[in-house]
Amino acid sequence: MTNVIKTEPLTAAAFAPFGDVLEAEGAPDKIINQGFCGRFHDRAQLDFGPGGRAGISIFKAEQRSLPYTLDLVERHPEGSQAFIPMSQHEWLVVVAEDDRGAPARIRAFIAAPGQAINFHRGTWHGVLTPLHAPGLFAVVDRIGDTKNLQEYQFRSPYQIKR
Image 1 (cartoon, rainbow, N blue to C red):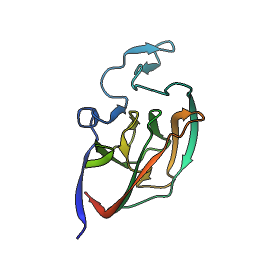
Image 2 (image 1 turned 180 degrees about the vertical axis):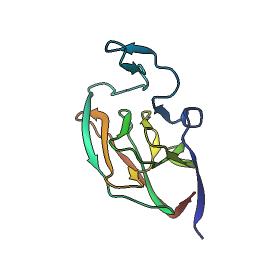
Image 3 (image 1 turned 120 degrees about the horizontal axis):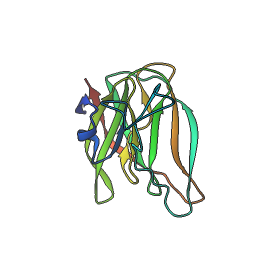
Image 4 (image 1 turned 45 degrees about the horizontal axis):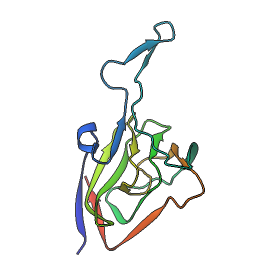
């Protein structure tokens, strides 16, 4: 029997234990560019650890659909990782708490169009999962020489549904 996880809307409060939600909601922190631009300032806790530096990559992931079978999560022990969609579509964000080095208490969020996320260092998370093409994302993460990827394969997969 497959374990079922129901999605929930992505909110800053619900996602706070895992990272930051990046969005242009509410009043901007500053008005710039002669009054034509609102700046939502310093919204993510970027962390690239000792010996690391920030890098920006472009990911193009294949579209997935719900229900979605989750059989693998990963984490980055050396730094944070931000996923910034380059199109206005919803997408799936999966996270889990850490329980003595293994993922536990998995949660699945639907990110609304215009929402991006930043996973804190060491957060278990699902792979990049766009629910619409083209699946194009800017990713800000650690560039460095140390190993920064741990994967965990579940013995029994999870089914993620709305």
